Length: 490
Image 1: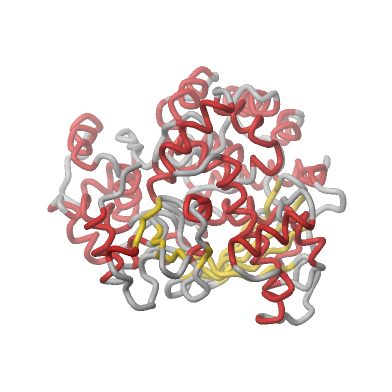
Image 2 (image 1 turned 30 degrees about the vertical axis):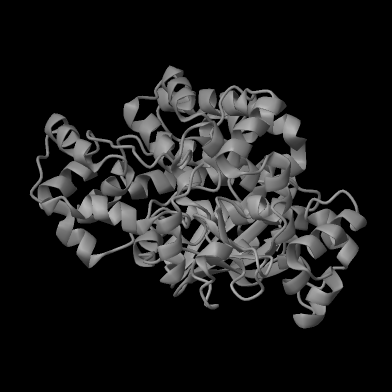
């Protein structure tokens, strides 16, 4: 991927936070790389090289700046939005697939050979999948070193390193400090086992009220809850269970994670960022939508509205099916019945060796949504819905449990949508809703949605499905964000 030198240098010279995570500035005279908003003195032009990824900068022999912490910058909105192979690969790497399945597993998921995948990623990002995963491991390890009292050997394997020596060498190379030295500079008090506190960066503005209102109206007992300005939910992760409390604040979302297995830190962070859409570029979205006079007022009044996404693609698909042609409160009632029935036969407890992680107050009950295999085997009485819709949920659960349907962000969006439409009882509205919230497609529009049409009418837009769909063409490629604004206007 080519970076425009003049544009990048202007962003660095003005310390523009909007570009954090989009590229990295490497300074040849100091041997360090920074985020564009680094408060240090702007380096001279002749001493600067720009990289698309932190991994590429590390590969070039540069270490991370200790002042601006470039590894903690928001992710690039490009990889969050793109539907091509490179975008899918970046989302899968962020979810820890390389650490769990190796480059072979990543290539298999994407349908390419390892060699061709390495070539594509190196061309676009300046680093292959191993280097990209290594950069993520280093960041995960730094977080664990600075925020937990785990032994350094435990941290090495929890972060995905193959040996303690590899861990030490990587930390020295990336941060120019040994893990023990990093801990000396940031000593941590002994805390509850499995609890990790961290800050998730985002590009301002973030309209957190809209996120909390949307999620709060759809909470399920035992799965998630909203308490004031904090959202809590259970997590089903690759190595066990967990829970998270997310509290939006200025510049950061404060996260408290409770994990059965600390190896799940990277995927847990990736899913929390995805849930709150923290890697979005609100300026680009709002500029496009604000150019429409009908939306200009809403954009000016509420900048930074995000698309609430999902930590579990299957959960979101079930929510979409249950929500067909019923109210939000009615869907909550039905979903709550399904969750309770699944808990009685095992639920998410199967994924971890010791069940959900302990947590204070009400969070100890948040165990995540039941897995597909459990839902598929529930008796008819557990659903409390018409036969046809019950059959749809069973078909959906069976397809996911058998691996025939991929509902995670690394899935091929077009292929997943096509396979959803093949299921009995799944139409364009359901498939679109799943594509928007589970797979993360930023350009979904549901012109037949009743709330969207009501919102359109409230904003003076055409409210017939055909006319509204035609008008929405001007909102590409951010129609998912326009849809959220129509729902808020309803």
